[in-house]
Length: 419
Image (cartoon, rainbow, N blue to C red; front, side, top):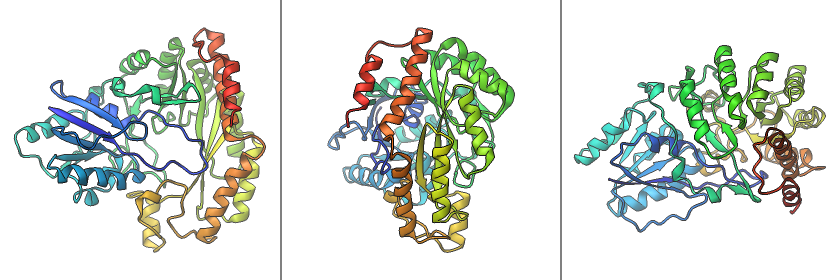
């Protein structure tokens, strides 16, 4: 059976430095396929897409809302040619009612232990329009190493530097954050993978720099401690979402290779100031993730927030506009209040105003978004701030003997200064 797995392209975040990370969801899905499947993977953000071929079935992996319009185009094209199309992934699950018009089948949920049934139905000519396994989470021990061999790694580079490889140590999340759809997708409970399998997969990755993509590492103290101890001998360097604010765990995280964390910054409180300071005191960098347009913010508040971010010396910052994705708590609130302005999913890239803000006009919010990016990076552009972070990890790699000699650190500095 020949499956063509496609990850549709989308428009990248405005103002953000343009680069491509290797997608994780599609290669995790590919790892769950039975051995009789011959799979071709296309990441349309970096690979050319041939639409004139004739696979047995096309599988669309749709993670982001902004990928939806392109996914519809691809699905419509293959269906016109009478080639069956199935869609899965986060946004296919969140928008299943819309996808039914553009694909033959929709898969909701995690594929391990379930995809065999779908393929069996397809082989027997009875592919169902919907497979909803959102309430039937697979045994976490069934999750195997991702099929990174399917990735065209030469395209996941930035100025000669290989980008991070993605890996996950757990699924689900015990938190219920207002912009997040994880509870709807059935992942509200923390589900750690067996540590031995996590270590085995990370050891097998031919890249010293990783992104541990778990929703948060601050899920369970004992699990974090065991994870970090297990990672120390591997000498990998990694990025993650938040780590528990605990001296012992932060110290272990640094020893285990913590390079920098994505930390939500939601106000100008001493809590945030101290949180950032404690990461940096333990040698861990911080990329602030800042949502603009929440109901407690007005123009002056956002200006003060940007000043605060410069004051606390964030390594880098990513500003986004509040975006009401489907099946999130914030979507439900804004729908109830009649404040959704657009359902053009191509604009759901977190850099466009698609709802009515409470304390400013939508134009003012769009303008203050540009102000935040331009002001934070006025004295040192984003490329150079990211370059500073990379230099820190290069120095750590040199110190522990894991640095790969091409390109040399001085070459990297030269590359990052080319605009």
